[in-house]
Length: 246
View 1 (tube, rainbow, N blue to C red):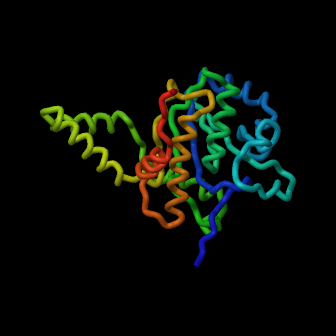
View 2 (cartoon, rainbow, N blue to C red; view 1 turned 90 degrees about the horizontal axis):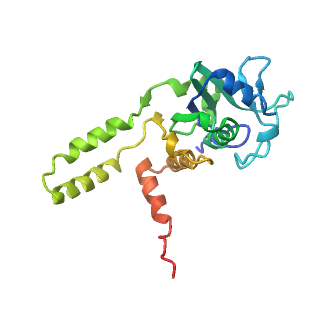
View 3 (cartoon, helix red, strand yellow; view 1 turned 120 degrees about the vertical axis):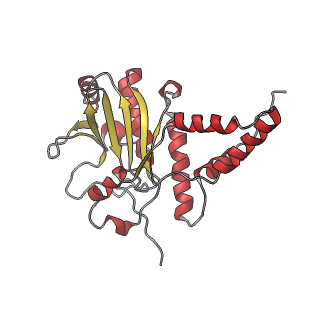
């Protein structure tokens, strides 16, 4: 029996993402975000909300949109929250939304805020899984979370490499480490750190990081057994080599 993919109102695969920033203060962020036509406090939920209007109405999201809600309300693209005085999060329901709205935040708040962590569900959903509503399904973002610390991976790598006593042994161990990682897949719910000092104005690092995960989800949805590392290696191999100018 064919499965039906669960998608958002704007046509992208439903795949919740939470972006977390270090910020100067909540008032700093709210005062600037509320200058946007697409941001305001929702009358019903009292949440600082980002809608599909104004600055966001022409964003490239899904392959097709299904129109505004029949009750005339605006489409909600994301919800801002402030867990503490120095932290802002944005919760969205797709990877394209995460990337496009992170760019909007960057343009609006500038370099005074830094994207520090991302949490994402590394799978797509069947439409039938939303039988009890998307709000309930959104809670999967806080279930069975694996928090990634790159320091731990670096320490494990250094310890592994120390087994080699010669340059040749270390080269062999490095190749062994790389090969072993190709078969280690991402966890179902992944919370990983960012490098804000290395991020570009257009959020290219975030875009690549999330799009690789989305591509992996697409391939696993279609029945392939593939890890994130394998997807990355295959995509990198498709990039033509740079040639020296003649």
